[in-house]
Amino acid sequence: MSTVEVRDLHKYFDAGRVRAIDGVDVTTGDGEYLVLLGPSGCGKTTLLRTIAGLEAPSSGDVLIDGQVVTGLPPRARRIAMVFQSYALYPHKSVLANIVFPLRAAGVPHGEREERARRAAEMLGITHLLDRKPRQLSGGERQRVALSRALVRDPSVFLLDEPLSNLDAKLRTSARDELKRFQQDIGATTIYVTHDQSEAMGLGDRIAVMSEGRVRQIGAPNEVYDHPADTFVATFIGSPPMNLVPCGDVLVGVRPEHLLPVENVNGERVTMTLEVRRMEYLSGDRHVYGIGDLGAEPTRVIARLPATDDTPITVGERYDFAVPQRRLRFFDQDSGLRTEPVRIGA
Ligand code: ATP
Image (tube, rainbow, N blue to C red; front, side, top):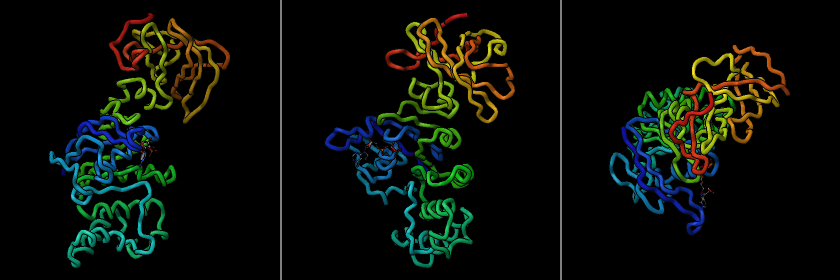
């Protein structure tokens, strides 16, 4: 097992015009499943490639198990990387594909096949060893790619959106499989995705990235419940957190905490919503309205669970409320989380 650390990492392209990574510090735990989450272009892939040694950083260091590996080539890092496109050799059999890295690494002939078969067994694909990649489903190809990564006995796995080629249903089962697989082998894993539900489901911790920086790193419930800034607050959660101006601050309200006033007990803050639109999603009602907290009116979304049958008509006004303890607060200018403020009644 291993830890991966990046220290004050910068990576610029085009003579500094593109700041793909703009000062990142991250340390994984041993055997941790860390997810890098962020929108397209935020630097996730570049960070992963720099850790793998496929890119040289402009400045800063990469450490594995506390050793600086910044100048070392990929093969000296005991890291396995699986990309979006699995890049299997189309003319080789599955077995030959899995064996390939061992041959390249100079593992003795007699040992190769046995190790490849063991890796295939771990991913349940021994019955596919004689096939060619084109005779496999997307999920099976993914398992071949993982077996090929596993066969070298890496201590760190770097996975770059490995599920993005799969359809929605297969992606869910592949995600479960991947999690189980990681727990079985216990290898430290860094996983890149822009899909927040994948991140929430897989990660021990999530590093939320934007514009080459890590905005927040924490357990899924931490980044969801206590977002460090408005970027994280609105990137995670679907529908995203509402941000309602109030004095010097933006008040953050998760849609599921904004409910018809009669259903909210204890200390609460009320807001009248003029309902503009409603959507039904998996039994929940998403209520789109306009509301305010004593400052300018803002678009707000409430998410009512299927168990809430309060009658609501589009075009009418209703009193909603949020429990006081559910409110989050952000600075209007910087967007950073601030101390709670008492508002309303
Ligand atoms: P995606 O989810 O779309 O793959 P990402 O978060 O992985 O995005 P990166 O691929 O790391 O983002 O790219 C980060 C930034 O660096 C982008 O602005 C991209 O255009 C730029 N970039 C990446 N590689 C290069 C390169 N070789 N030359 C110039 N610019 C690059």
